[in-house]
Every structure is written in C-alpha cells, then in structure tokens.
Length: 204
Ligand code: ADP
Ligand code: 5GP
Image 1 (cartoon, rainbow, N blue to C red):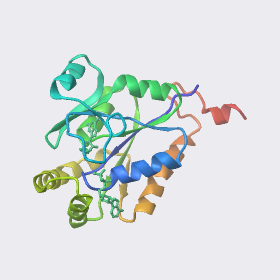
Image 2: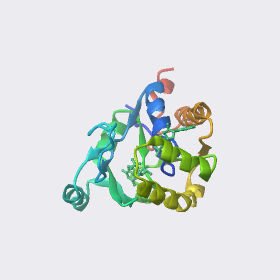
Image 3: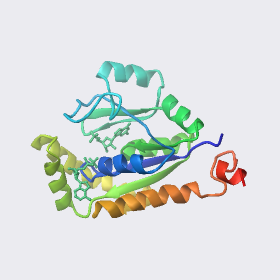
C-alpha cells in the first residue's frame, strides 16, 4: 500500500486551527489526526486520547528520554510531543496524517529527515481579531491569553519557512484552502518517498 503524506499545520493560538482541522477531518477521507502528548491540563471540552494524551511531566520526560517523540517542544509553558511510532503506523496504513504542532516542532520534523512534511501556516486576519478570538473561546485565563498573544508575533516570524500560508478570515474559505492543499498533494503522480504511484493511478 502507498505511504500517506505528512501535513504539518501551525498557527498562533486562537487563530482557529482546531476549528478548521475538526471540520477538515469530517470532510476528507483517508485523513488521520495525530493526537499529541501534552503536560497541559485538559480544557473543559477536551477528552483524553481524542484531543490529546494528557500526561504528567515525569511521564513526558520518560517518553522523551526513550526517544519516542518525532518532535517535542515547550509551548506557552507546557510540554507537547508527537509520538513517532503512531505517525509511522498511520502513514504505513496509507492515511495522510495531520500534525497540529508549533513552529519549533515543525522545524524539528523538517530537520529529522525521517519524513518529508508538507507545511501549512494559518494566520489570523489581524492581531486585534486574534485577541478577540482568544477571549471569545472562553477557555483560557486572562494571564494565559496575554502569554499566547505575546508569543504570537514570534511564531508569525516563522511563517516564511512554511510551504503554504492561509489567512483564516472567513472560516469556510480558509477550510477550502487547506483542503485544496491536501487534494493537490494527493494528485501528484509521484507522491511517495520511494516513488511508488498512488493506488488510484496504479489501478488505471
Ligand atoms: P486555535 O486552535 O488556533 O487555538 P480555535 O480553533 O480554538 O483556535 O479557535 C479560537 C476561537 O476562534 C474559537 O472560539 C473559534 O470558534 C473562533 N474562530 C475560529 N475561526 C474563526 C473565524 N474564521 N472567524 C471567527 N471566529 C473564528
Ligand atoms: P493548545 O494548548 O492551544 O492546544 O496548543 C498550543 C500550541 O501547542 C499550538 O500551537 C499547537 O499547535 C501546539 N502543539 C500541540 N501539540 C503539539 C505537539 O505535539 N508538538 C508541538 N511542537 N506543538 C504542539
């Protein structure tokens, strides 16, 4: 079976990345979301194993020391990481895998040369709108919101290293743009690392 592709999606916190990705997962077949490990406390609407694998610092450190992570980083004061084994299994099964990770994590994946990712950066239409969305989400304290806003400019400075940059102004349009990137990537005649054609092509 052909290997899937790895897509990295990054955005400053509050941009709407989670909203876009949740819709995307219901609308495109053969897409798998990589569930990260984090030491952050779960939000009210989050479930363990679905949104994140919630672990304590000791558990996270052990996994990191054992080399289980494809990438890991401290983001807004919490630790986050992507388990390599899970991603490789999903790719081997032929799924295109979505990593919702930050700029530091994206840089690590690109450097690792284990998997060649397609990278997408989503930006808000303005910083004022970003602040409004972070407040409107109603899940974070004002201190957390301040920290995330303060980090947004530095994160945005990394956008030039991404393959695609999409503005999330009107939600439906941004979703269509993300879909377009994935569908265009799927249509490449030689899309796997070993050059094997996609199943749809080999069946013709
Ligand atoms: P992120 O995952 O990037 O931190 P979320 O998906 O949690 O962001 O979205 C932050 C808030 O912004 C949510 O309340 C969401 O409903 C809202 N939101 C997302 N996209 C848009 C949009 N295009 N226009 C207005 N509000 C949006
Ligand atoms: P949140 O706490 O809002 O869910 O996520 C905060 C930030 O952490 C977001 O930018 C998100 O993309 C990033 N993030 C989530 N999982 C991972 C991960 O596994 N690795 C890295 N490097 N960043 C992650």
